[in-house]
Amino acid sequence: MCSSHATVRGLLHDLPEDEIFVLVDAEASPEHLSRATVEAVDLQLVVAEPYFKSLETARRYSKLGKELGIPNVVIVANKVKNPEDEKAIAEFCETHDMELFAVIPFDESLAQAERAGVAPLDFDPDAQVVRSVKDISQRMKERVARVG
Image (cartoon, rainbow, N blue to C red; front, top):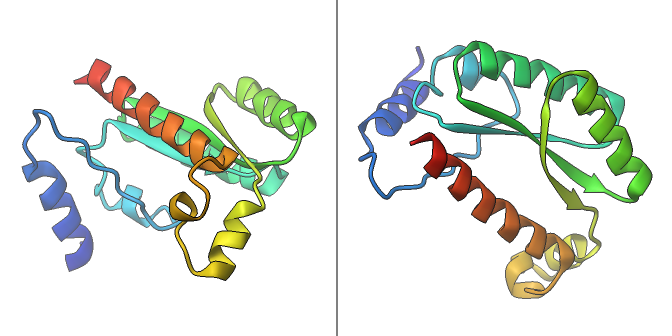
């Protein structure tokens, strides 16, 4: 196991279990899953965009997470532009026994914040995408609390 994965794995295992919530943004590759970095993970968010290739990738990651024993593996739909996008993702998830946990809408304010060099939360705290991410954060905490 490479040293960076061993370090992250050790850190996650050594965290106190009471009153702590850690969000790890892993790279978009299965390496962290295959190297047992996720042994201490209670909830895996698999981000999928409303395109077949992205959904197929999400299906494979979801399956791998479940096989590795992660108690909660859920899908977060990202960059959803319209009800048709959301319906397509929901149907794909249902067909493949995946839980659609949340939907993040496509929001032009992200590009505007990027151009301004400002975090989306600081650029427009009332943006739809910011509200969606706040909601996901709260739902994650509730889900993990039920697991622990």
